[in-house]
Image (cartoon, helix red, strand yellow):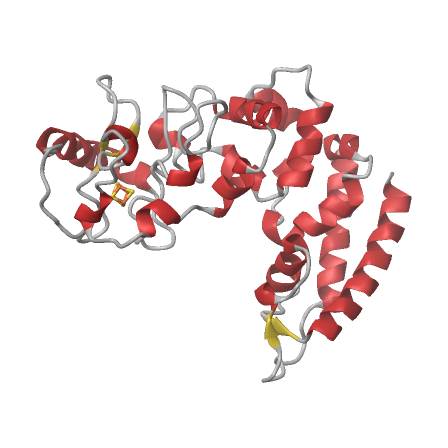
Length: 289
Ligand code: SF4
């Protein structure tokens, strides 16, 4: 997330550069093994970042492709060595983009992680509410999926996060106070695969349910029942469509693919399934709220 073009906005926090104390550098460069966690290599990464910063020649034009898992242009952006980001970014070069020097095509300016995308769609007050949950984290903890709760929470989707921020607008949460109040977010359910269900159940007026342990348990059971009842049991037809390409709501497509296991499906089958699932959701919502 280190300083993507479409994330620079002086009027509101962005997920990659929320304030002058920290930044997210988790996706620079985006070619690491799936379970990579830089926190386990903090000392080595800090040394590399210091070397990159010291060796950086801002007037250079040389093209040096990225090799291995680390980019030579990732370094410290401030004199206190707190904020980590791209030394070639146009924001540091009077608007001129020098990222061609790593020979990565347009990828550096274009790529954005799903969480940053969701965050960028929140209103300014909502983004300011949520970013408080990362107060006190340094750039290393902030860039870690394990340490930064925003990575997990943003998986539940913009509509839910916006409603919670609205509901809590007069409060100033800390990470601890928020997570101990909203017990639901202690669930082991996969946020992206269940965001559709949760949105349909609680966004219409049941946000308070997220503070009840009883609701968390019954929602977990409900989610499991749907997966057992509607989950894919036979291989997809060869002429079916990749489910992420269907013309349906994004969180329903995520539910289909990640929770029910339909990587491919015909649109009419998906619509039929949606009708059945929506009926079940409505029944569950009426008994929960
Ligand atoms: S050139 Fe900049 S944006 Fe691209 S991977 Fe390197 S540090 Fe990240």
